[in-house]
Amino acid sequence: MRHKGGVFTSRYQKPGAEPATLLPREGQGAALSMIRYDANRFEEREFPDAEALFERLREVQGKEVCWINVEGLGDVELLRKLGVHFGLHPLALEDVTMAVQRPKVEEYDDHLFVVMQLPHGDGEFKVKFEQVSLFFGKTFLITIQENPRYDIFEAVRARLRSNRGYGRTRGHDYLAYGLLDAVVDHFLPVLEPLGEAIEKLEDALLKRPSQKCMKELHDLKRALLLLRRNAWPLREVVNALVRNESGLVTRETRIFLRDCYDHSIQIMDVIESYRDLSTSMMDIYLSSLGVRTNEIMRVLTVVSTIFIPLTFIVGVYGMNFKDMPELTWRYGYPACLLVMLALAMGMLAYFRSKRWL
Image (tube, rainbow, N blue to C red):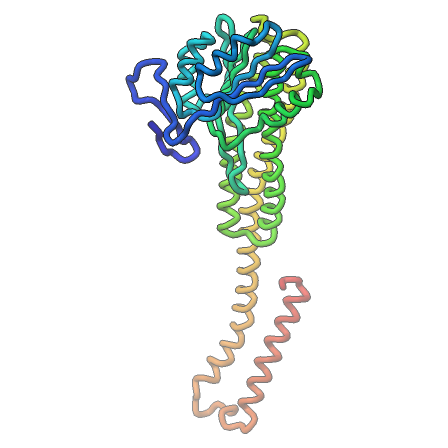
């Protein structure tokens, strides 16, 4: 079941449902692939079903790293078979299909379960998230991606294919680090356009604040809220892996995880800086509105002040009393207009000398 609630749109089970119930994603299938490698060998294959995968796994040698990837949450039977084969906890598989989990790491008897939320830009001030789930133990690593449209792990695959870096000489824990680092670093390409949009929005607020600016500012604050909501616990996930004592994370990999932890802190610093800027821009918006209103009122006040004596003159000569000497004067009308014009020009000059205009 899916509840539409704006920012906090969620996917949840029917109240009272049996624990460890797997919910398929409607309209999605599931693509299954595997990469196995060591320092001298690399193999990458796709499989039509779990049975074909399990048959191939019988050929995996002891020191080879085996990375299984599932794209899409439409086949819960495939997830069940993977869970039985690798001994994955049913509640962890339930969290995979819920796809609204807070980033976390959970430790089981022989494997770790990691949940991450991957951001994607969806317009200038909008962000969407895809859940990425990861299981890894001594002899396997499984990644499950919610949306097959997005794949940020291609850079990791490219390094493994070309045998660049340490990937082909390390174990499953180092591969898990590489995948986690790819998710953490993906926050930066999402934050960069937000930073550029903030600069444009700030200029617009200073020059001419409008309802459009206010709406964009609201969308910006909501996007930053979502990013912080998922980046903050992701930092805790990396820190938990650094301090993990299960033996699944080696000492050498912890050094790399500490660097990943530094990246997560930098991302949080950027998000907090942008949030502070968005808050200050709200103050700029209100101040700009106040300044603009004051300028308009000043102009209107000056215009009203100029017309006060002009209205007085017109009112006096509009009484048309019989004994008013100027009423019968031949040049009375143009003289009155000249006096009114001189009076208006004199007041304008005076206001300008006082810098009221």
